[in-house]
Image (cartoon, rainbow, N blue to C red; front, side, top):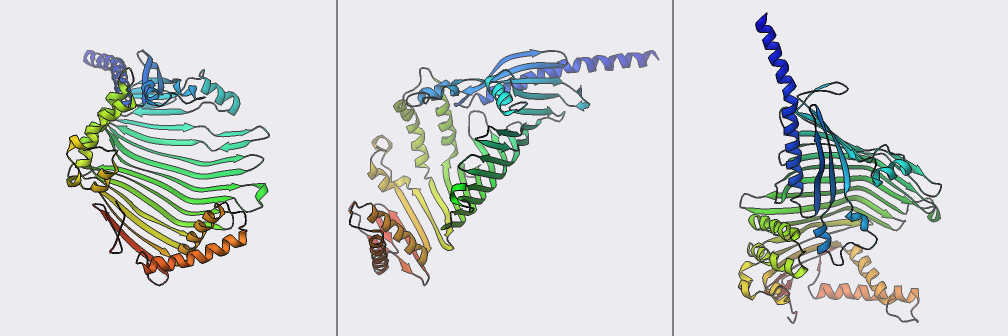
Length: 471
């Protein structure tokens, strides 16, 4: 019996002591995370206060933009935007584990609830003008197994003053943080804005991110942002929408390759865009990627940015450029390339597609001490550009005719009527397309025109035919 009592007392002592231990661990991790965020040269995060008790803690963290960033900007803070210099106070309510009793029993090292200080101007405005109980709230817990699991939200808004009305379904986010690895997902169901002159509706906003960020270096990972539909209408334009877009998507990815290089890419696409009754764009996509970036040089690039942005007094633009030149030279010597692929869309049912690639030939660069990056001849010698395109004849004719109309309309000739402009544009476009085909600049493939071009060492060839540039 005596041994059982002793064992029970020992267990109670351990359970009572554990919150003190987990409290110290939680404070240490929060301070480490704040230090990691401060390695970014553009923001400042500061633990303004931290009152740790036995079973919990209360803290306040202030978020702001790095003053050195403003100092680097021409003219400092933009006029009328002094609020950008303000710090946003975030309050943290922390419970210490491993057994947390708060509306239920939870096993975790700690739980955290974070929200804007209710007394801050932003929170007061949201509460008094928009009826929001809080600006945002983040709720999370640190499992015994490690990491941090969180969910956050911005409450719905339903506001109207008789002139402008808007409703916002609210934002919901959830994710995990484990070491340097962060995942997050979020959604907004709808946003509606109505005024006397127009109504805008945005539906089904979604995002998903999965990235890994190393302190003092760049992040790698991928993310995607989607909007299902955007509609803009106006009572002055009749029943049909002024603008409609469906299936908008933005995706991005950065990755380290096995050969020690880095690739950064982005992709933009939209299923359809209509404006009025005479314009429709469909199946549009644009891809941009920079590859063969020296990963070590990229690390030094970020380190240099952080060093220069953190110094006082703030570095002048020419000092920043001088500090970055050695890193940029290493990047160029690695032979990076920029690809824009694909470029495609269908305008009013007529297709267009293209792609181009810009490569840097390190062998064509002069020795480092002799490089003048403001000299166009350096880039003309080192750049290799390849491009190809395909367009329907109908679309080529329409685009060229519109360009010709704009040129004629802007000529300043008062004697030209709209009918004259249309007739001249029609005649000149037909002749121009025939001439380009006869010169070999365009290839006639039946219902389409195609072309490909290459520029290297100051020489341009189009469809295999050299084109004098006079360089």
